[in-house]
Image 1 (cartoon, rainbow, N blue to C red):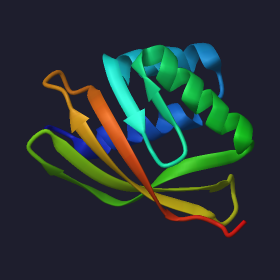
Image 2 (image 1 turned 90 degrees about the vertical axis):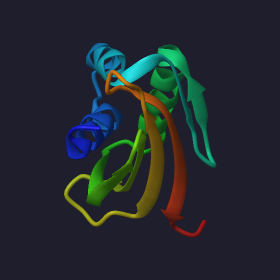
Image 3 (image 1 turned 60 degrees about the vertical axis):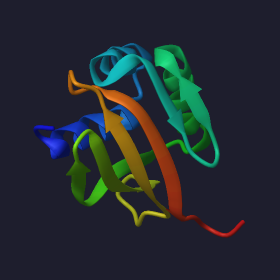
Length: 121
């Protein structure tokens, strides 16, 4: 795996992209056609499913942005990285850790997410 930071930055940029057409193009660049995503709250498969899931998350958290925490860690085709989410320009409120499988072409084949810090409801 070449540049793990670039993979993570492109992945998080998709979650932050508000323009649906631009986000869809970014998904095609970063994810394999049959990619999957799952975390404790949502899941998606293929470009359509991943796009719908991200669109739903953006609707649930308007004005929020994802950013990377620390440095990604890689082993073979596996990638582990942390992220944070919060209102743009304010303290973050949610942290998570994602584990990804990177395909031989450098695109994401699957991501499994875990929520490390969430506000009490």
